[in-house]
Length: 115
Length: 115
DNA sequence: CTATGATATGCAGAGTAATGCATATGCAGG
DNA sequence: CCTGCATATGCATTACTCTGCATATCATAG
Image 1: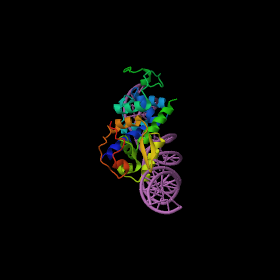
Image 2: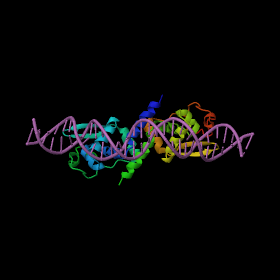
Image 3: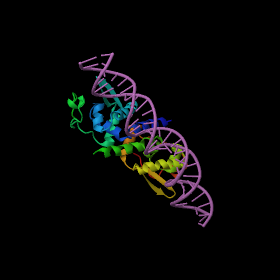
């Protein structure tokens, strides 16, 4: 049965069917960031952001790693990036100004790789 | 603001985040079909199928036209087809056997246009 | 060990979607 | 017109998601 195929697809689409989560992913496809940065970009409370990150993480869409007191998040694979490109258009370049005072905003990062 | 961009994207993903709707779309990307055919393929009641078709239609994802007593549905554009391809893999060929006794099953259709 | 900043988790109230079923509409044939 | 088939709509119930807030955890500095 390919009922499973549709269920899996539906679950994937489901985590994408949320404006704040989309904005988070749109930011993450530019570069990996810490939570406080996403908080500033999205303009929501920290628990709110963490909730959405959890949903995304449990769906396998993003990964995280800890660096000292900070936790950095990034896309887990290219599939989501392709879906975002299809629906949101191409990713914004890395040109945006710092939006908060977190480390990943201050020192424009080590991996300042242009497109 | 691109808040709208995310809202629109979220709405699109939302209509795709549903196993039965995905299965309907998967069938429609093979070829256009009437409602009774989808009913047989998906294995749900006719009102149920019509409900989901309405959701898809109101989202602009599919179109329909009437042919006598039958109503045929088809994908409205290529974007959804590309999203399905990304998530469900390539469309099944048109090789499947008739699943019901509706016209679009019986006479393998007038528009038997290969890819 | 304590304090502080960063992040995660738990929980409850409100809102929204999903589903099943009864019924309405629309079309064609007689 | 009346009947039968194809499809659509309305509605009520159930289930789930969203969101905000209080609080817990974890790491580092002192």
